[in-house]
Image (cartoon, rainbow, N blue to C red; front, side, top):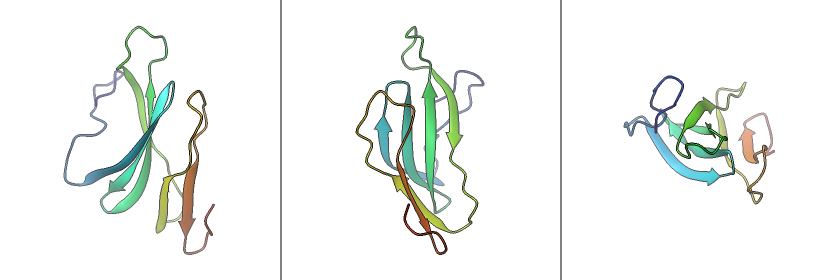
Length: 96
């Protein structure tokens, strides 16, 4: 998967990144997995003009303040939404 804006690969299939799951929505998708052994969540924003369904506009990773944590996708039941539910916890932050 490459972004339309700069042609950079979002998921290159390298050994340092593994996908655990993906949730698809009307204008974006959210993927969970690990990068360098750390749990991660990525947001893939698609072109919403309908001209090109496979056009990836933006690829971003959710950032967190703590260095050691666990994060993953929560229960996301609504297809037409601009919000996503994630599950997050760390040694100092309870499950939220």
